[in-house]
Image (cartoon, rainbow, N blue to C red):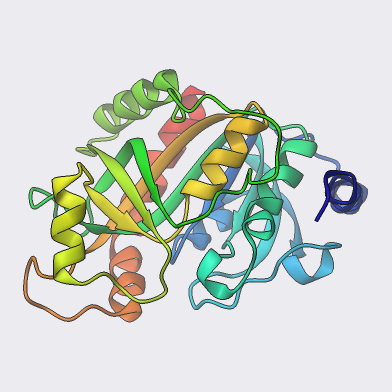
Length: 269
């Protein structure tokens, strides 16, 4: 898709959302696997299914509601994606980051991107929440391919938002971890040898999302906070088999802790 066509598609989607919502959002939220219930906390919400927004990609993965929700959350105007689409679903990288481009077009300045991840760091436990401080892109593609801009990713995850999140964790009684997120293409889970490789190159978390959106957010000039919920230990660490059902079950058990943390973060922004 050329740049002019992409821009036209983004404007159409933005117009659709603005025509339905009277809210000018300050903060964007991407709610990953099993975390979409956070959108239910939004007051006086307006909701649109992904399928009702022009050119918007539609999620096919369990645990992703596929809705845009806008309104007031903990005193701030927000726009949230209850669910996301993934590269492994067959979408192009430009499709994967289209929602970020649209939220940027709606006026946000900051974005909180969440995911469910596998623990590579053996000090982690299922249910831990990790503040992402950096990432490693192993997806074999980049959403900026074909773009003439060279985007600085030195502080891809905003240092001020990282510190704010850590303070919010302390004040909410949530002991947060910090770590590096490795993005894999999926949809198969990693092998034990691949997890060992990730550990050796400095990764703490393995997942199949987030990095394309973070790259696009930085291109759009947004400040990014990344949060990963550890839903299982990665392959080879415990010897147990992995399943998406385990991901959903762990997020269900830990969702109240996650909501409490995000509440504190948004109140402090």
